[in-house]
Amino acid sequence: MNFTRNIDLFLFLIMLAITHSSSQSTTAGDVITITKAINVAKPGCQSQCGNVTIPYPFGIGPGCFLGEWFEITCNTSFNPPRTQIGRLQLLEFTDYTFRLANKVASQCYDPFGNITEDNPVSTSLGWTSPFSFSQKNQFNLIGCDDFALFLGPLQANFTSGCIALCSKPEEVVNGSCSGVGCCQTSIPKALKYYDTSVGSMTNSNHTKIWSFDPCTYSFLGEKERFTFNGVSDFMDPNFRNRTMASVPMLVDWVVGNLSCSEARSAGMLACQANSECVDSDTGVPGYRCICNNGYQGQPYLEPGCQDINECEDPNNLCDGVCTNTPGNYTCSCQDGYVGDGLKSGRGCTKKNSEFPVIKFSLGKLILIYWPR
Ligand SMILES: *[C@@H]1O[C@H](CO)[C@@H](O)[C@H](O)[C@H]1NC(C)=O
Ligand SMILES: *[C@@H]1O[C@H](CO)[C@@H](O)[C@H](O)[C@H]1NC(C)=O
Ligand SMILES: *[C@@H]1O[C@H](CO)[C@@H](O)[C@H](O)[C@H]1NC(C)=O
Ligand SMILES: *[C@@H]1O[C@H](CO)[C@@H](O)[C@H](O)[C@H]1NC(C)=O
Ligand SMILES: *[C@@H]1O[C@H](CO)[C@@H](O)[C@H](O)[C@H]1NC(C)=O
Ligand SMILES: *[C@@H]1O[C@H](CO)[C@@H](O)[C@H](O)[C@H]1NC(C)=O
Ligand SMILES: *[C@@H]1O[C@H](CO)[C@@H](O)[C@H](O)[C@H]1NC(C)=O
Ligand SMILES: *[C@@H]1O[C@H](CO)[C@@H](O)[C@H](O)[C@H]1NC(C)=O
Ligand SMILES: *[C@@H]1O[C@H](CO)[C@@H](O)[C@H](O)[C@H]1NC(C)=O
Image (cartoon, rainbow, N blue to C red; front, side, top):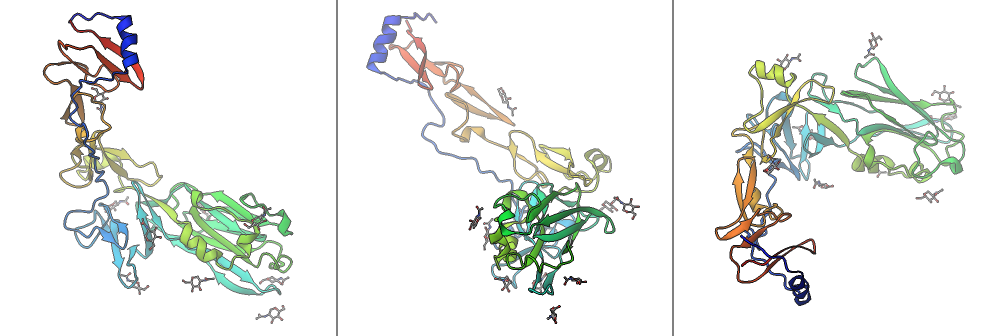
């Protein structure tokens, strides 16, 4: 092909504002979006409980889950039905985590220092389970005369603690949890059990601060979901219920109790075709299966991950003909057209065109052909 650049023609054509595209796109006008079918149950198994979608390796009923730890029960004595893992209430699954409904420990006093309400809390994910509390959680203590001790992985050992003090409501700053009225602390990796234990720091049992702080609260919960609202939290009789409903606990999960290589040599690897095994990074032994790039679906279930047809995605990079390949796709031009077939490249232009062809890319004129 012989092309002649012509600057005058260039300007002339800009004046005419001709934006002619001769490219042939297989997806022109189509609005097809690829469904991310990652969170699916095993075929033939119940996939929903209430509004919770249950993805394999979790499942309800015999044959529907990967191992004892992944059994889910749907408790229909509640309306809407409650999704349970063991005795814990499950709210949602994400890719490698799930969220649990929270429990908030509380201790309230009367003006004389008598304890009027005492709700201790402990939560166990199971000592040998493949689950652990995500480090995106933290322990929180709300109060003005209080300490809390959080018992960690081994029941007898104190892992962490918090102290929250203040003597006047003016000292407490909204949104700031740094020891005045509110204390936060991060949790160790692989935490599977905790127990909150709260008490009065000064032995005055809230008598000096009771007018603005009658209760102490402590809980483990997702960092991002909790904001301390200062004295208005102390005075909110609904604080405990509100926090349980709005601040879940995030749990990491892995499969098996072996690394990828151990599971492979034991012939127990759960990863199916077109997926990759990744060793656990949660501190709990195990692994995860992840679909290879260009594949999607259920890595734990036969027949494994399925090729994504990128050509059905209007955001693919082809300007010309899109051809799906295993794990990827290629772009080319139709017969009678030349170019690289890419939206961000030269696209496709007609061979031996009678008219000059201009290609615009991001509003910029990038190429002019004057075919002869
Ligand atoms: C499930 O329903 C509850 C209320 O019934 C709602 O608070 C929650 O956001 C819903 N979860 C999802 C994932 O839709
Ligand atoms: C469902 O919830 C009820 C009420 O809390 C409880 O008595 C029952 O044991 C639960 N069922 C299951 C299967 O956990
Ligand atoms: C509360 O404390 C006061 C003073 O110590 C005491 O007289 C009273 O009996 C206590 N009340 C209860 C219900 O324990
Ligand atoms: C827990 O405490 C016991 C002694 O009370 C000690 O032997 C053990 O190493 C501790 N474990 C951890 C994880 O610190
Ligand atoms: C803190 O928030 C409460 C209610 O949200 C408000 O009444 C109070 O004035 C705020 N205090 C400060 C110091 O911003
Ligand atoms: C606070 O409570 C503790 C134990 O319940 C008690 O020994 C102590 O005397 C109380 N202090 C006050 C000031 O009431
Ligand atoms: C908190 O929730 C419980 C159980 O749903 C309920 O019995 C209690 O009245 C609630 N407390 C407040 C202060 O709303
Ligand atoms: C790992 O899991 C298998 C099967 O659930 C069990 O038989 C085995 O005892 C576990 N091993 C360890 C070290 O926990
Ligand atoms: C798909 O092919 C393109 C071009 O050949 C390449 O740049 C890209 O890395 C490939 N993508 C994958 C996921 O293999």
